[in-house]
Every structure is written in C-alpha cells, then in structure tokens.
Image (tube, rainbow, N blue to C red; front, side):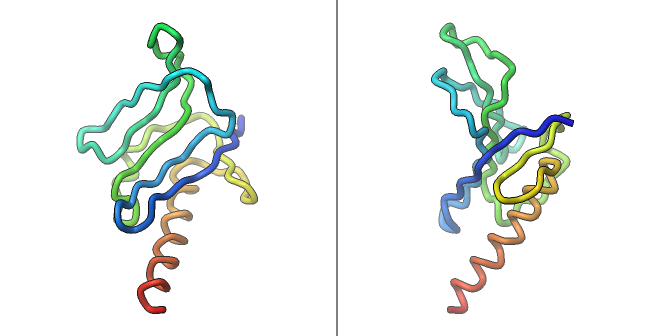
Length: 111
C-alpha cells in the first residue's frame, strides 16, 4: 500500500481546527469540499483553470478535540505518515493525534 508523507497543524483549543497536509505543497490552488455538517473539509488540488486534479492535498476538521464522526471521513487506499510515526490509515492516525491533543489540553488546564 502506498504511503503519503504529511504533517499536522492545529490551531489550539480555542478554535480547535486540525489540518492534515500532504508534505509536497502544490503551487496550484485548491478546492474544498465539505461534509453535510461542515466539520470536515477535503482539500483537492486544482489546476490553473480551477479544475480539480483529483490529488488530495489536505483535510481539515473543525472541533477536532470532540470530533467523533470517523465514518464521515473519506477512505483512502494509502497510508499516511507523520514523522516520526509509522505509516497508518487515516482514522487511526487522527484518533492517536486526538488522544495526544486531549492529554496536552488537560495538562494545560491543570498546570
């Protein structure tokens, strides 16, 4: 199975938006497609004519700390790798990141 290297961004607990971005940034624009509830946006590369190329360049989840609609995420026939972790399926990677951010946020409140 192919592996896509990526990196994560998070806006912090106030606005709580997690972004997963493909490592090789594109110079073209991107088109966002949202799910029914507007919590998840899939970002697809577009060419110079604003036509989608089909290449996924990112994913954003609003309200990530409390997000639980994993079935709403698109399925991919590839693994995602955020260094230094091993490649894994999208949902598994995001659940692990959510757990880590929840712990980090809790310790900030306690500390």
